[in-house]
Length: 485
Ligand SMILES: Nc1ncnc2c1ncn2[C@@H]1O[C@H](COP(=O)(O)OP(=O)(O)OP(=O)(O)O)[C@@H](O)[C@H]1O
Ligand SMILES: [Mg+2]
Image 1 (cartoon, rainbow, N blue to C red):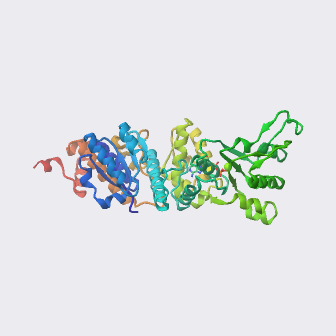
Image 2: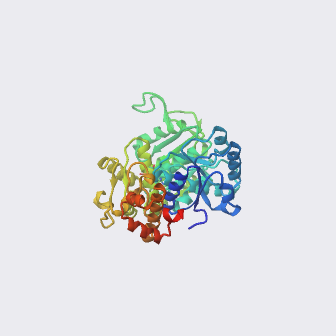
Image 3: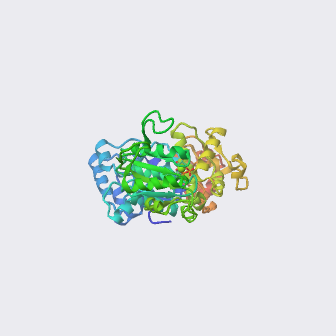
């Protein structure tokens, strides 16, 4: 486990502190859960580097103590992202903490929300490190929606952070559906041009004879059908970003014209006579191999060098299976936000999807989820429910006995299945150890709910009293009668 894999929970609700820390530990993090009265004593100087996120819940101390807490965590090195639970923070604190509060979650929350928060926390820390290593003194920015914790995606985000706020031309390459347009939009959103237009042009989808007028516009009467003067995409994008998608499909004669525009920074409308200055930043994208096209004299080398000032290569999904659960989560979240329905995937189904080759990359994944949401609206999808070509596992019974071990108090809203809390890591899991921790935690909760009266706790867990006593002995848990002596 990495050094910064500890989650700090400061919350004066004892139950929630306990529940949240149980859920987060199931996700493979260490937690430190404390109340507002004791947090300062509980954390020493060396601890602050270990936290990847702070979940901040109820804080019942005086307001100046909360101010002091905020001031202190802002001094922590490593940029600890804060996730607020439940209520928004008081206005004055909210503004001083603004750069650090990355999310607010409702309680009870579900595993997907927690996963997203922890993921964004990780992105936040990466960005923090990047800015502090490169000495850039600007706002910490997050490339929202572009998720993935693989080294390859981290590199993409680091490259993006380096080039976003500049006028350098960027070339995004990668297979179909890998997120090239998403990168282009994010670069625009994180540049000083963000308040000006982002104009996409799919060079492959526009018929050759119309491409010139589409890009540069035309004067009335310049060709048959040009009944009115129309401005082109270059002029529309003035001050903003022009996204030349599928640049590899641009015919050679247009490549020559484009090169001239890029050199001179002016355009001429079809049938027009004057040069019109344009200020656009160009981001181009293609799934084709331009180097091979240059060899075959299908793409101009001079244009290539103009466009490819800063290359960003999008990795195929099969090269980064560790990103698959996060992207699934992101896509399901996006569906929910847009009221396009929702589904939950069982751990086995997620594992099966991690083994899929994904020739159509994230777009294929997004299409699959849409399809599943129609077939199983708001349902839990197991391996057997996936279309045949997505099944790469033995059929597993997703409802094995473990599911009923979860008590109401830690069930996220919705389903009470084990899948809602436990996600099988791509690298596997020590099942025995996991189940032991799970069992111990649930027994502790049952005992605490029942004031340590063993017979009632046994009822709650639906096991025999003698079985519970046995397990308590195994886990060195004391019972009421003993603690009172
Ligand atoms: N890392 C990611 N995290 C979350 N969603 C992603 C990610 N990458 C891509 N997507 C989503 O996948 C879909 C396809 O992305 P996009 O259109 O940017 O790909 P593309 O490379 O331009 O594809 P194509 O070559 O088919 O045009 C979009 O809905 C996008 O939001
Ligand atoms: Mg695209």
